[in-house]
Length: 114
Length: 114
Image (tube, rainbow over all chains, first blue to last red; front, side):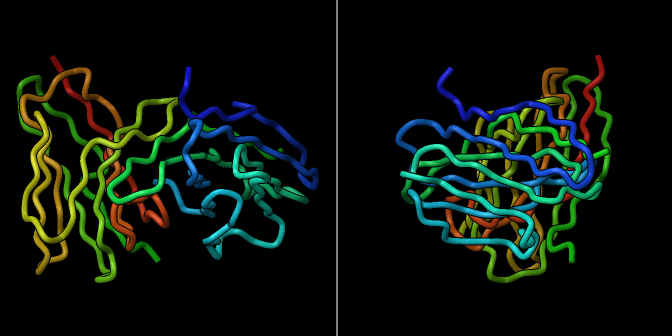
């Protein structure tokens, strides 16, 4: 399968713990995006990378959230000191650079904070 | 602040009928308007997209109608099929042709009955 891969698919954690999610984009896609989707809502933009550079960050990305994309390949999203409000589906998408290019989403990581 | 309003929240259509989903936006900086389809447990998948310099775009059974002056756009699904049963999201971005900073609507759950 050459689609966007996210790991883990599900994560249950206790409030206050740190969690890290991984996203492997489609190879040769130099753009990578993170979105968060809560139940019954549309995805909300979190951040965007072009290669290894983080070019956009939403105000939703509080100081407890950090995203990296070392070497412009896979990306990680870390949430420190998790809160119950962080429970959501975290979606990663990737696209090639260029006008009118489609972004492909992964299946997401479902985070539950108890 | 919800910048893209989507209606209806849910829709039931008979097989062969026309499904119509409407969206309205406020931010005049939006320059790209995609529609996504999402099945349970899956990430959103791009269906069709339009820019504000055209009033209509058709791809197979899917048509986007766009009214720039009213800041509204809609998705029409012709000859709706049970396999079309999914959640549909409209979205908007200030960046043409990319998934960067997409603002999604709240989604429409479509059920196509036999």
